[in-house]
Amino acid sequence: MLRESGRYPLTGRGDINTYAVFAETARTIINARGRSGLVLPTGIATDATTAPFFGDLVRQSRLVSFLDFENEAYLLSHAVHHSVRFCLLTVCGGAARANLASFAFSTRYIQDLPARRFIMPPEEILLVNPNTGTTPVFRSRRDAEITIGIYKRVPVLWRDSPEENSWGLSFLRMFDMANDAGLFQTRNQLENARWTLTGNIFVSGRKRMLPLYEAKMIRHFDHRLGTYEGQTEAQANMGTLPRLTPQQQDDPDHVVMPRYWVQEFDSINEQKSKPDKPVYNLGTTSRLGARSWHRDWLIGWRNICRSTDERTLICGALPRAAVGHAYPLALSASGRIGCLYANLASFVLDYASRQKLAGTNMTYGFVNQLPVLPPAAYQIHPPWSLGSPLSAWIESRVLELTFATWDMHAFARDIGDDGPPFRWEEGRRTLIRAELDAAYFHLYGLKRDEVEHVMESFDALRRREEKSQNFGEFRTKRLILDRYDAMTKAIQTGMSYQTVLDPPPGHGPRHPAR
Image (cartoon, rainbow, N blue to C red; front, top):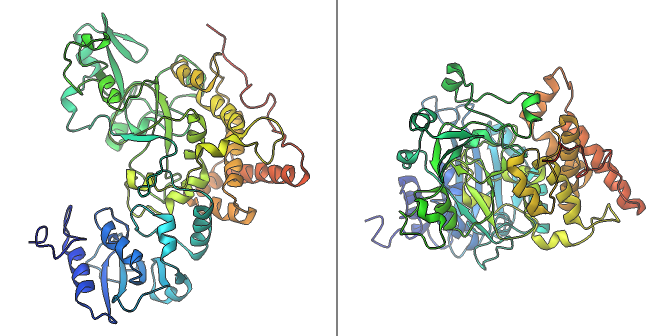
């Protein structure tokens, strides 16, 4: 009845939850000049399933107020878990249009509500989430002002209507770790079958088994974050992986070992120009081929994350391989993939993603509504440099950060470099990343006080660095602000920005050529 009666066109779909149906009922039965008020899970405004309902409230100017609470102080009841988030949703009838709506987010105590409450035109929600109409989850009025300012200057990555996909993106979940488990092989199985391990790829004649990368093996500018080689039982119980030593990071031939391997081709005949009816979608190549992807590298992001972690939007590039479902792939038809990668890895975009994520799942719906600079933005000269175009300025830094191993040679070649990999020098890499982040703060139009606010919002990262014996301060913030100020000075004086790195990014020390 809920699905087919036509009485619940906005909530009678997907995985139906009764709270959403009651919310739609309340909206339907109120007088044209009346109001309804309900206590509901915050998901009514943030979840994909309820997006049609909340988006329609916004578009029809029926949203009066949305006040979001955390139950940390047990405002609801001690019987309700402290992590539960709920809201007070007020909706008006059709004749009493609400041109301004009242919002508050992450409120813990009733006495804090007046200070956290602010007014915002509902159409600004559509500016931030044009595809779904769901509400962001701003932590403060300041966060709302900064985020809305960003969206006024920078378009979303992928707009549904009218469709705008300037990066030519398609998304892909390659292998489901549960449903596709029958395709996976372990190291013992392959060695017992007399396959030969070369690097982290198993070979038998013309057949190859590719490593299956999982999300926890990858982070920004590092596809060798974790390895299953040498994993202890304690680490396995905690779901963590051993990290590489500095010596291993600086070895361009060192590769990480996965837990599983997956066949490269559906059959040996798939390697020929006319495959002999391969079994579709068993091999890695056929799954990428379905997206017409012919490059020898991939870019994706971690699906599972939290807005309170050190970083939320964690993306990374890796060699062409099998990839688990918790690391969705973003396949772009653009030739400026290095610029897209740098943008996705920036603090300013990470900050914007935190204003949207109420749960722990960075879905396609979140990603495609992030504010990302389009390819055309990289055709100009950066305002802080009188030399090369912005694309070259960005890509030279992405190149040195990404191309530290021979298995990423294809990525370097597609950017325009055919030399050997760069040395892994941690201090140098930190400064390159600070320059990139400072650049994107400028490109997004943030003022210095806004940059400070954004960086201070990364509480977990700040606490770790301040407690570190090596730092004793929020080093990342200091380095980024230092580079931001240097770029500001270059813009104001008309002089080119001078990097602190010698040699400059993209010209750093390299390993011997082969």
